[in-house]
Length: 289
Image 1 (cartoon, one colour):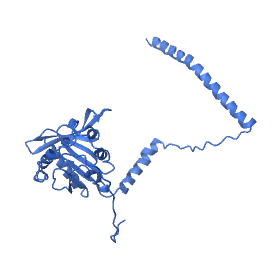
Image 2 (cartoon, rainbow, N blue to C red):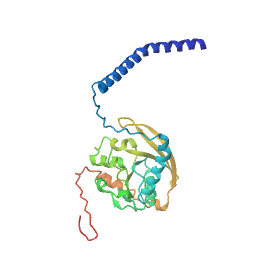
Image 3 (cartoon, rainbow, N blue to C red):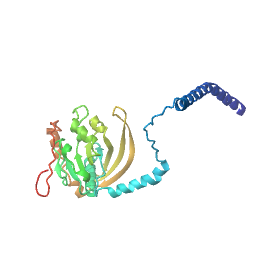
């Protein structure tokens, strides 16, 4: 058996050598001709070759990157980071049937972020008691910024405003969905069924949360990362952990669960024309710049 395998390997090497030999000979002849012509032009015709003008740049060895550049850059980033810099971002979708606890789970996350980042601003469409402003139209998100301190956006029952196949996603809202990292903004949304949300928004979702409430006061939330195909369809949901919380008095009294129901039934997100916004700065003397 061993001898037979050796014979087969030897035959393969022999065939490859027969095929490669002509190619190697051609390459060798070509290289020899190039060197010959270079010597003729250089020393017989006395031609001066122009410099290429290309500066060779050496790549840093991987070991230097890992054990010098990366830790150095990481510590410098920590030192140069603005105080209270808002790290959370993206679209976080809480999905589940009625009574599963998706709204209270969404509020719990927003209140937790608000306590962690006290300088962040909050805007919602369902009357959270600690919100800074009320979200009445989607165009507000284009102008609602807070620098590095961050913005927390809460949208309850988002599928009623941006439903798949029902409402066309406005261009401005697509800009909001794709610019969350640059604007230090996180969107915390709820929807009964994830696939009923407009595809343009679904493709930008960072994490899907599936809450399950027990005894009416204890909620377990399972986190999943949606994986999309080239057409934006969900092909897989990867498990990313879980957490739980108890419904406290503070949490239950933090929002009006009925407000969004009436608002959505009457209005929804209307595609209003966008207006240009001009920032005006005022100095200490009261003069406009």
